[in-house]
Every structure is written in structure tokens, then in C-alpha cells.
Image 1 (tube, each protein chain N blue to C red):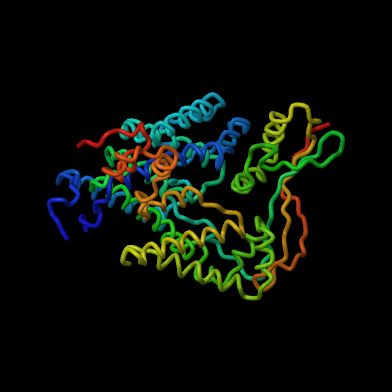
Image 2 (cartoon, rainbow over the protein chains, first blue to last red; image 1 turned 90 degrees about the horizontal axis):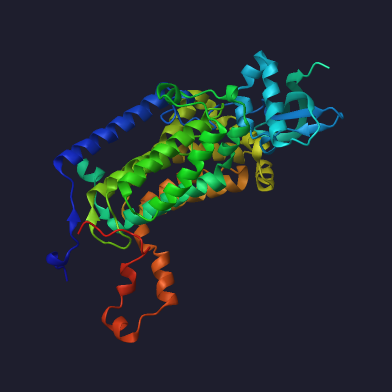
Length: 155
Length: 300
């Protein structure tokens, strides 16, 4: 049986509270739309949702980027996120900066040394891109490695 | 329109959502984005502040700054999850988490999985006090949940838009999923990648579901929940194949669910300490009225 007087009470908004909320909603939506249409990642948090939004031809090779170093014993050291605290996507995001100024890779070596004080010093840091072959939108399992940026200490 | 935007929800739902969101903030710092703390080891000249970081006078992160934000934010978000002082603690969490995100995103990579969570953090302080299990309906709380839902759906719908903008119409027939699998695929993904045409079909499917996602607001309750269930299943597949969790988005999306029906603490209490028979007979639901002993009283 429906008993209106037993219906749950309601906490309502004032006219002003309603208007302010409507305004905030519209402003937020407008900024998000503007970011989507014209913005870049720089406009965080209103930038475009561009995760996985680029398009590549179904037969173009795909890059898999990694950072590695060589220490003074000649051993190759992987310099991933666990080793340096720098995420791979951050290396890729600033790859043009590294290419223009390979000396910046010294910072990666420093970040590594900071976290591994006992490890032998690095004498070389390089950004290596492994290009995977793709045919018809499917990986074929073949790949080639190319060094994109290289920095060496002067002996 | 404003009626829909501020459609009242039970205070218990706001309380449950608030607890979940603030607990997630603490978990996010410790479990999901601990790499933000490793910024401490990354030299300052790799810091490339975002527009918002250049507009606001924010300092270049130092070990001390990042450490202080981390510990204060963990403490304040755990306090906020009890529902106490929702405005003061809520705004504090929002401000600190926002700064945490600006630090996280200013080293060359911006993540796109947390607009829903940031909106939830921005609006929860305005939802007012809410006690767990309180059936009183609130319009302020309704608005907070509604705009969180809108942000969640924007993440899908505007992502389709971004695909047209950056990838063009060729996106659906390109090799984006194959590339994602190469970079971070699981064994399961490697098996799937070998099925002819499946990845291309999946790309059309993703585009279709993102473009149609706003329909969730037009569906009747039951179908709406089913569609949200589909969204969750989509993320389950992306976790299982390309290890992308979108965790903050998944938490924000619980704003669609009747969370007030999930009462883990009340349930535990009833199991552990059954009330004496006489009391139980008179008030069989008494134990369900209270939860999280620290939760504040409603405005009554």
C-alpha cells in the first residue's frame, strides 16, 4: 500500500544551489569539448582522450621502445621503470628532446645511480627501438632493433 | 533538464560512493601509481610542467614536497573515507590529489583514465553529510553522482571523437590493437592476435560502443545496469589482453550502481554479534541502521 506520509523525506536544493550546479556542469562540459576538439595533452585535465587514437596502416611496423645502458664492465643493463623510476612512455614522450640533445640521457644514468649506489657506473645510455613487422593488422613475429639515441661518457 | 541533473539519490549511496572513492585514493597512491613517488629520483630538468602547472605557481617537485604530499594525502583520504567533515576533508583531498596528478603527468606522459575520478573528488565535498544506510534522498548527492556519471561517459564518447581527430576514419581498419599487443600484450593477447581479422573487428566494436555509450542515460534502470556491466566486461578484457587497468575510471563508474545495497560492515557486525533475541524480535533491521561507527549523523 502506498503511504505518502511514510515516503522517505528529501533534502532539496535551493534555486541558487541548482543554478550554480547547472552552471558548473555546463562549464565543465564546455572545457572538455573544447579540449577534445582543439586541445592537447598539455591541457590536462581537459585535454583530448587520445589514448590509442592514432592510426597506422595495417602493414606498418610497430615500435617497442626500451632504454638500456652499458656499465664500465661492458655489461648491458636494462633501464626500465624499475631501474630508474622513469616510465617508458615518458622516454617516448620526450624522445625528440633526447634526440636533439643526447646529453640529457646523462639524467637517466643519474637516476639509475641514485637508486643503485653499489652498481658499476654506466658509460653509455641508449634508447633502442625494436621494430616489429606487422602484416594485415597482425604481428608476424619478426623484428629489427635500431638505436634511436645514444650518449657515452667521455673516457 | 535540471531535474534530471539533480535527480535525488539515497544518502546511503552517497556515503558508500564517498567511502569507496576516498579509499581508492589511498590505494592509488600505494598500489597503482607508486611510480609518482619515484619522481624523487628523476632529475628536475626532465620536469615539463603542464599548462595548469605553469598557470598555478606550483614548485618543481623535490623529494620533500612529494613525500609530504604522499603522507598527508594518504592520511587525509583515509579520514575522509569515514564520511567525517565531508567539506573540509573532501576539498583537501581534491587539492592534494590534483597536485599529485600534475606532478605525475608532467614528465612527458599524460594518462587519460582519471577524469571521472577527478570529477568525483571535485563534487563529493558539495554532496553534504551522508550516513551509511540512510534512505533519505538528497538532490545535492544526486548531482554529484550524475556529473561523475557524465564524466565517465565523456571518457568513452570523447575518446571516439579523439580517434576521428587524430587517427581519422582509417582508425578502425588500422593496426592500433596489434601495436598495443606488441608493446604490452599478455599470452592471451598473443593467441587472439593470430585469429585473422579479429583485431579489426574488435576496433570497429570499440568505436561503436564508445559512440553509443551516452545511450546509457536513456535506458530504464535494469538495462542501464546491464550496460554498465558491459562497460566493466570491456575493461576486464583490456586488462587480460593488454594489461591496461583504467582503475580510477572503474571506481568512478560505480557512481552508476545502487551502492547503498552493499553494506559489508553492517553485514559483518550482524554475523559476529547477533543481538539478544528480544531486541532482534522488535527491531529486526536495527543492526543495519548503523555502520562505520565513526560516520557522522545526518543533518536531521
